[in-house]
Image (cartoon, rainbow, N blue to C red; front, side, top):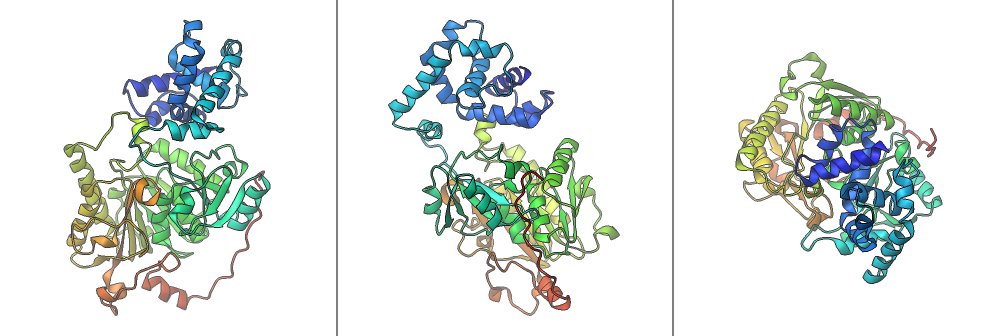
Length: 471
């Protein structure tokens, strides 16, 4: 089957440092890129386990024409995947001849390591010093359902709901089919590491969004009220955009920009599945968008998550073996773009609140960018203290940097991330900076939006839609 050959070619390319998994998948010309990407990632994730099983079973000695990467993909599909339900072609009878031996070697490996589940082999086989196992975070898409209905549906499918977590230790202790409600984000469910929900009907129907907790922070902290106009400056792949739409309840407007046409096409599919109807996509460079354009005269909220080094991405070593911190030259180029984008965003005349975020751990892309933009704003904007209980703060490189948030697998059980919230100073002119209350998840609104809510008649709440994955 072409799928297995394409997956083997991507694995070989990654090993030979010809590119990242995503890059090689998209350049493979295989029609179903999501299917190919999922198969490659899962095969790579179990790589050490598969190597051990293949070697113990003597598969490559017995089948001398079988290439190692093809063998790895096929054995994954046989033992850990869908068992050739997707076809298999000429490979199916070949693997059938060795099926009993391969299964026996996998069972023997479990006995040797004292585990009963395939996932437990991953934890034991991880490299010393590697990042801790992170939970699987799943955001309930409130445009299509509500948390209670999603939980009820999952319980009927055999998952065991353990209530709201009270600490990170609760998240670390998750195992099996247990899941929790995140202690901070009210619409975020937490499952044990490696829980795979890609084939789950709620995910396929757009009721669940697979999104890391740190990636949920920008939209939550921007917190635009329903009816607001928002810019998502560097929007693809679109999870944050769909989160913004959920907070807006599809009321208002999101202007989403990105330069990559392929990523925008995938984003349009994602937003459609998520039920987003308030977003206008544009294949444009945000730096070329004029703040004086009348279409954006009501934009009071901007989410800026620009291109970055990705040094905080847990899967980066998997996708680009040998990749470490970016070079000084690359960091300078990225930081220069990020500074221009942030300074440009702050020139939109109606802007009241902005969230700047990256999936980088580098000071040059984070605190340094924010500090420079604040200095250039000449006091028009300032950092807002948020989430006082968040354990990992910004580096103390300038006064107020502690108001920024950082995230790492070790400190927050999430991917590496950075978030800063900026607000226009005159909005809070009656309150001195030292008197600004620290905002909680339930109260991340600007003074401007509070006044707006007083002026407007309160909208009636929208009832939860029942979970109907078949829709």
